[in-house]
Length: 399
Image (cartoon, rainbow, N blue to C red):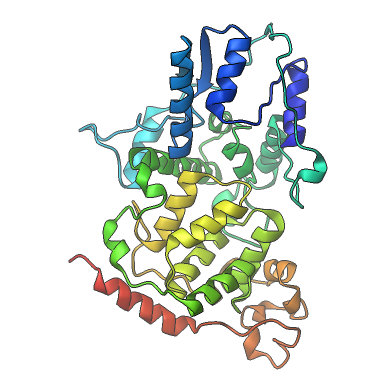
């Protein structure tokens, strides 16, 4: 991101202003220094962004400056896609149909001939030594190159390969979309009518659906969309805390879960299929609340998106809109066999199992030397915990 901002600054003739202070204070100070009458900004829709832009708007208004909010980070802004009666959608499939029929305008070319203000006090960028141990490549140019590589590498058969954790079958654009370095309209404008393209278009629509749901229900970022799930029995206490820590560090004894959690810690990213696997394990095998997992993801994901994070977790927990059926409990062993059939993904992130050369890596406890290099035994019995999860869900079931 530092390199991205440096590149942006150069494209602006070194007139990019960076302030390390609350937005309401910083934007007002820069607007006043520039003698601005109107400040233009891209509209935010997540709770934190809305609160920040409201604070900025009030500070500017008090100084006689108008805040003009335009466009959004989405192909179709939240609130634009509605049912015929004017209410928001709660199910993805009809939302997608309406969203697709609504359409979106083509990407707009960058205007030429900008006149930048003379330098205003800038507090600069952090040094490279202050950055986290892994650095994510960022910037519009890199995002556009990544999209071009995806089109040539995996878009055509995206419908078939996107769930394979051991293959590079996804776009790797989640960081760029999260930080606004590439607009979804730029992507959508180049998608055709083919199975791979159509499935990828639907994945973009999932992001827009969740953004719409969160905007309509801002409390759902941290609370249950379906309140009855708050009444379900969840595990608490010392053992629950120990199991949460094992999940966070990738030491549950289930290779596919642990590979995902270690990938997160090592890279700041996790394959989407694996996100569902580890989420199901936390909620339905360990009987912990989805918010505990969502908070860990927020802390560690470099592509964190508040709407996708909260409602992705709620989908798995069964408590959100268009949620996964409450009785669906992912089997972490079978998921490994299906989406990492040769064990390459697990071997990459779980070195204690690297000596296992085939698919049996997904059940190392069955091998004589499977746990010989320090890999832990499973912290729970999946079949037992699946039955327990279903029993707890049955207690809050609405007939």
